[in-house]
Image (cartoon, rainbow, N blue to C red; front, side, top):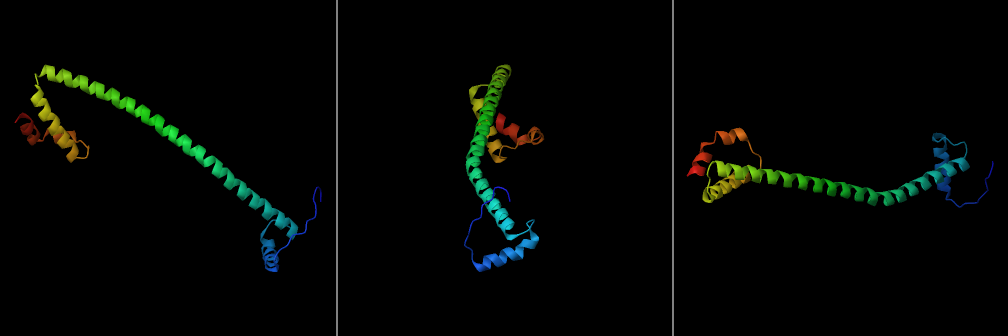
Length: 138
């Protein structure tokens, strides 16, 4: 028994009985070894709980940083798409000589269409929707 010291500990008799009942199911040879294993297990549990308390905010912070980075990236992409869409709108307005009143009606009509479909656009349905053309051209 290298580097071990003897300690007296107080336990209820029922706890000693429980140790004796559980001893055959453990990897320990005797009650002292069983108690050492139990204490080591409990220390590991406490340290794990403490490390979880330490690491949980770190994980949370890293997830927040990743989400913020993704948000920045998506915002930049949406901005670029908006610029391209604006350029295409300008070209179409010039090419088809669309005036501002017609453009306003188209804007309202498209906003209503998108709102009614929750933003889910089915291009085939729009292509064959005769009411869209009637509403647009008056």
